[in-house]
Image 1 (cartoon, rainbow, N blue to C red):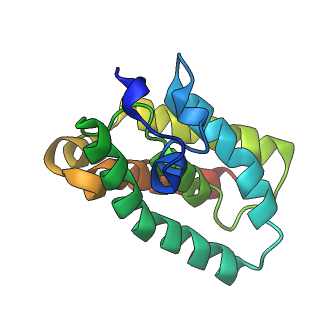
Image 2 (tube, rainbow, N blue to C red):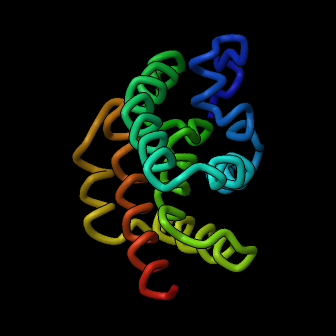
Length: 153
């Protein structure tokens, strides 16, 4: 991994790196998802429509943000790029009550789906490229985790 080529001074790369959380030496995706928890807690005060609109906007912008950062280091889906984890976790938590339990279970489910990549996530991960490819597998993992969360709760 060539983390030295990322520039935190570049605001787009700073976002792609999850405000720096993706630069964790081990398990950057997990640290990126952890960094998304305070963002989720802050957004949870919004009504559901605004929350959803922000998540959709973050997903759309994420295609550019992740693509820009990947091009900067010339590595597709570099592990330090964790904006996609932010979006995936926020998708996981859509329309759920905010409790310690839901945050922990949502975090664990999202990480499991993101790491294991069951079908169709694995197919998306292999066949989609660029910023869209970086984002879409985490969006799908978030949607699967969201379905499980709503089944559980």
